[in-house]
Image 1 (cartoon, rainbow, N blue to C red):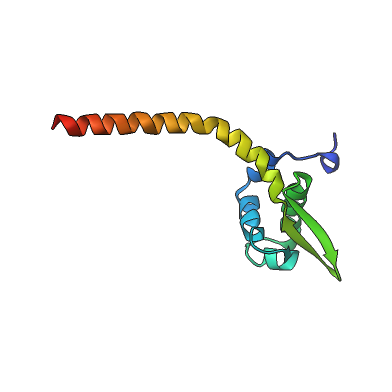
Image 2: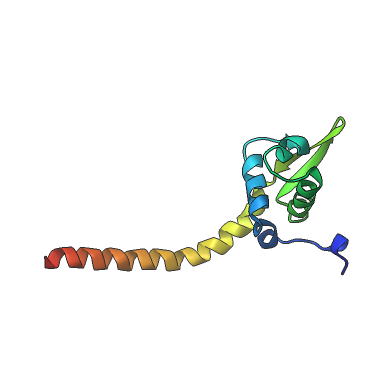
Length: 110
């Protein structure tokens, strides 16, 4: 499969710190690529590649408005992440409960 035909999944897309920062920027506002680029020490072409990957993963969408393309977050796609993380939350909660038990037990022994 050629790289131009590759479809990215949500997890591949969010693996990169720059793409996570782009998502944060788009969380509140629809922005043109020029505004997004101004927040990073890299070229417009590099940001365009990041936006392409985020678009392929359906995390952002772009719409032509006049001469510029504006990007916006597609929040419904984050449900896949939420579902995956919620499964592992049970282990985190279990560890916190065990820590609470240990701390409270130690306080009673003093």
